[in-house]
Image 1 (cartoon, one colour):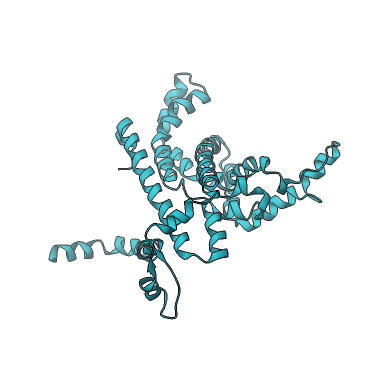
Image 2 (tube, rainbow, N blue to C red):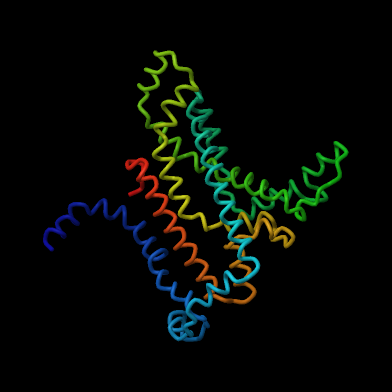
Length: 309
């Protein structure tokens, strides 16, 4: 015990720095874990408060999970959630790395910072604002795209009633908003690469593309794998704002915009079934954990140094 207290006092400054983050995780990540038992109860709120209501609610076993996946929409929301996230992970990785490399190759560093700020800015916009931006482009009456199409004699498109366009629109909007933020990690990794490697490559006559292909990308591979593994853990989570605010909750687009998160929200808003929404969250967490473990195992078998653990 004396040794423990001695270590605490020796590292008190570092521990104080960690304290806010640790408190955040405790209150918002670990304490809510107790509430996951609502996934196995028919939760009914009473005047006794949340926790007492949770204890007094009837146990229903796996009924909430059965209800979640016994509907006709179960296949659609699972398919949409998976396919969109796979596209976001793969396409987002390519664009984030490409942007980081492009920014690192700009000679004028002041100009590079201007470009970086411009690409980073969309990340701070809420999806509600982004939804209005998209609407200004896709509006049937006054949208910019329909105005351009009319100049070429093409009839206007009712974008919010045409599901076939929205997989591309959602991927494009997500890239526009997130790629600048995601590129920061890779840009920082590039800045940490020993410049003597590039100097040696230039002496050997390597072109810029050869330097990128043989130095930059191989040295970025570990961080690319780690970021991909972390993204795989959230492959069953969808960005609620993207799939709810951007399509403006259009019912005709549900076949391509309805994901697990929006489905649970609409179900909770309509029926008030807290148990069902908790079951969906628990299902997403468990599947995400399993996928991270499997992905990490595969990476560890291929390249031990690139695995998370």
